[in-house]
Amino acid sequence: MIRFDQVSKRYEGGHEALSQLSFQVAPGEMAFVTGHSGAGKSTLLKLLGLIERPSHGSISLDGQSLAKIGRGGIPKLRRRIGMVFQDHRLLMDRTVFANVELPLVIGGVAPAERGRRVRAALEKVGLLAYERQLPATLSTGEQQRVGIARAIVAKPTLLIADEPTGNLDPQLAVEIMGLFAEFQQVGTTVLVASHDLPLIKRMRKRVVVLDHGRLVADIAAEEVL
Amino acid sequence: MSAQQEAPIVAEPRVERSRPRPVASWRDHHAWSAGASLRRLMSRPVGTLLTVAVMALALALPLTFYLLLGNVQKMGQALGQNQAVSVFMQPGQTGPAVEMMATKLRERADVASVAIKSPQQGMDELARMQGFSGALNTLDSNPLPYALEVLPKPEASADDVARLVTDLRALQGVDLVQDSGTWRQRLDALLGVGNRVVLILAALLALAVLLVVGNTVRVDIASRSEEIGVLMLIGASGAFVRRPYLYAGIWYGLFSGLLAAGMALLIEMALAEPVTRLGHVYEGKLQIGMLPLWLLGAVPLAAAVLGWLGARLVSAWQLRKAA
Ligand SMILES: Nc1ncnc2c1ncn2[C@@H]1O[C@H](COP(=O)(O)OP(=O)(O)O)[C@@H](O)[C@H]1O
Ligand SMILES: [Mg+2]
Image (cartoon, rainbow over all chains, first blue to last red; front, side):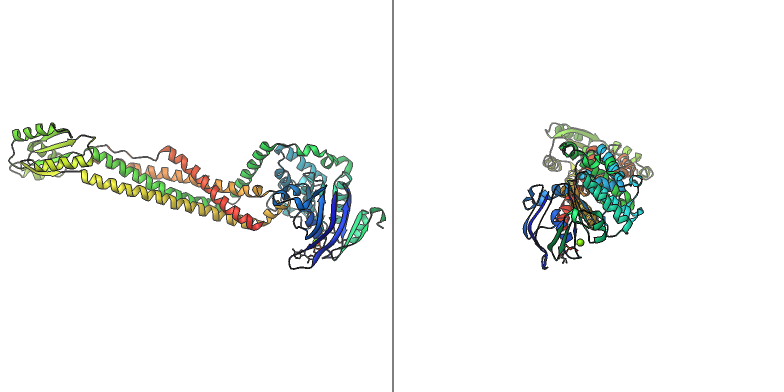
């Protein structure tokens, strides 16, 4: 479970990107973080992956305080989190298969097992046929799905995505969000940052609304109209 | 894509994931890194070949010097074996007198043997040499004196031989004493300098190899900062990110070392013929000195270590900067 307790983040030389933010996400829950550009959505996700550290307050993940994790412990934490980025961040000089395989190599999974899991993940996002191709030969939506396969292949307990549909047309965006909902249904905690309100409403999941770094609304799934 | 059907990929019990296999996974990591870096080098063959060739030349240079030095040394030793001191008697010294002197000399502790060369023997020897026979025919009488070939004991030091030569010069009836010991000493001294030069050269060029690898890896890391960032984001440790670059250093070193050993063998083959010909001039006592096999094997290994070291130094510095 994710727990933010009075978390503030001030970037060097900047104003407060997050301000006394407190909320929790239960294990297996799916939540959207929304708000205008600059509201602090990306910052929130970066704090979870220890890409940034909070200026004040504390964050814990599955009962473990992130403040106690030193530089050496960061890789281990990140292996528990699957991250999806708006620009997918695939390695363009490696095949789809090799990209999805990376987290398993890093995690020390045996080679035979890796092949099985990569194919299962690619099948899940509907791209098994493309495993030998380079990402550049794929469409934007397909590239994003490879990014998602890479994020889930090592079976993370937490999946976080920053504007995963930002570059996609509405039809594809719905498809991608559907994928996240599927991962939630099988027990993964999912946190998605997005400013696409119509899409978020369609998903009928919990919505955390930020404005200038402050939490201004926390709407339960049942209350989403 | 129904969630129910595909559920196992995410829903499998998480215990299964964390089964520890430290040694096997360490080995897998290394195999993966070694393979990945090798494929990366092969993917730009021209650049890799140029780097390897530059490094190989740097390694081959001291090897070649070492080879030359070894041959000069052998040559010196071969010549040292006929380190006889030639004693030319004054004209007019008779056979019996020379015979008596030889007998006395043979009693000396520092003398191995004494051979007498009569004027006639000297003349015959000269006649056998090309170009002399014609000239000799014009002589009415034999102008050559008696000569003694005094061979010092093999264990005699340069000083012992020098003392022997002084004694010989003082003997009655001796005209000229010719000693080959001095140039041996000079050659040995020169070889000593040469050995030192090879060592210094090897050290400098090893440094060059280190710098070449270091710079290649530096450029490589700089051009892959994005990839490194992605790897870090998905949980790669610093050691994991760094490992392919260390292997790249090892590959560069190994390949350049093998190429350098190959070049040295070719140079050796090219030298064999002229050195052997030179050997015939010295009564066939000379054979080409070859690079020892252990050295040819050690060069690629040492170069691999150098490559690893260069990559290690640079990657530590570069990745700290990137983090
Ligand atoms: N690395 C940074 N350095 C300084 N300011 C930053 C940095 N990243 C984000 N900010 C600022 O923090 C605020 C929140 O940014 P961000 O979390 O990216 O918002 P969002 O993702 O909701 O658009 C913005 O005002 C932004 O300019
Ligand atoms: Mg953002």
